[in-house]
Length: 406
Ligand SMILES: Cc1cc2nc3c(=O)[nH]c(=O)nc-3n(C[C@H](O)[C@H](O)[C@H](O)COP(=O)(O)OP(=O)(O)OC[C@H]3O[C@@H](n4cnc5c(N)ncnc54)[C@H](O)[C@@H]3O)c2cc1C
Image (cartoon, rainbow, N blue to C red; front, side, top):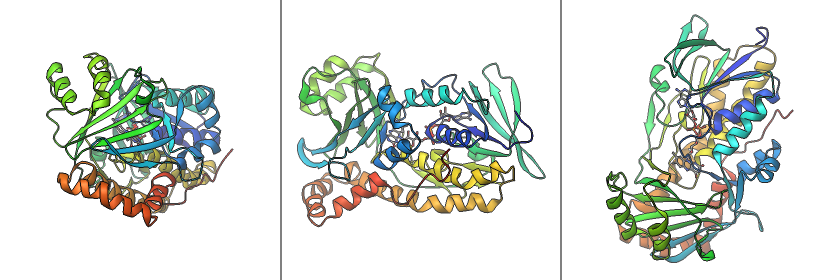
């Protein structure tokens, strides 16, 4: 590490952290990434990428490797069914464009790490958990890490980006306060085998709603079916007895997927419960520590926004910070405030949309959901509002562009 050059510490190697590392290293800035897992085979964290972020990945030269190395597959459309009747087919914002991309996070993050590791500017502490900050008169000078053997170490940095995702304990260490946004349901994610019947393989996403539960299914880059089973209360999703849990699932799954679940859902199937949460910090920064992605604003899974907003946060933060870091200047508080101000509109609007749409998906009384999907949605389509909303979901609310491309 060259002591005469700025050094950025990034805590958390999710999409926000790794894209931040990618942008900084490409701009000749020293980076240390800290990740509590020893590798990238982590908890399932969703895979839906919107058109706006596909554009950023293209600019960063990453879309080529994503497609060539089969880290992602195009999602042609999102098909919505209510009581098993089709109510909407959502396609890309431009004619002939896909609805988005299904990106295998583990493969993608591992790829970024592998490529970054070729640079002497990149250093990583995998299998290390950041537990606290060390403050002096000038700000937060370093961060304390702990490895699996509980050995502690302190790392000095000029700026610390905290991208540790939902529920991070590091918020409390700096006494940062969050505003909660109401959510309406929870999810059990289950990975299922590829169905034998072709018509059961989603070319993109399928959402099955009925007012009592919901199912979202898509084909991942390995050709397997990733399924979200949503319910208002969590106890049936968290049922410890596998046979009981499977019986409830079979009583709720749309009829065409009965056989797939009966044969394909096993006790050993990869699955993960998601307590749906949505919140945002009042202030994203404390001195020279900046929170980004889910650590700053945890997103609900409605309309697949979390990964996208996390990546867009890092792009905006990098735009603002790179000129200072390149010239080895310390970052003023105004820079962090400017980053939050530039991002907050998109975050607030998307969280409000997630709350409202999530309510009609599975929070409202059944009759209200029915009215929404059978009567209001066709009207929205007719008056062009559906297209406008889709444009916002896929293209983002704010204009974000990568300013420093090397
Ligand atoms: C089950 C599930 C499904 C989802 N589906 C989608 C979807 O389809 N589309 C979408 O856009 N969003 C989805 N989301 C949301 C999306 O995954 C998140 O919004 C996104 O991953 C946020 O990225 P991030 O980089 O901010 O945080 P994360 O991806 O959560 O990454 C944080 C990283 O920090 C590490 N870490 C945490 N604490 C520490 C610590 N103290 N020290 C060191 N490392 C630490 C974690 O291990 C992790 O690797 C889903 C989320 C979940 C949980």
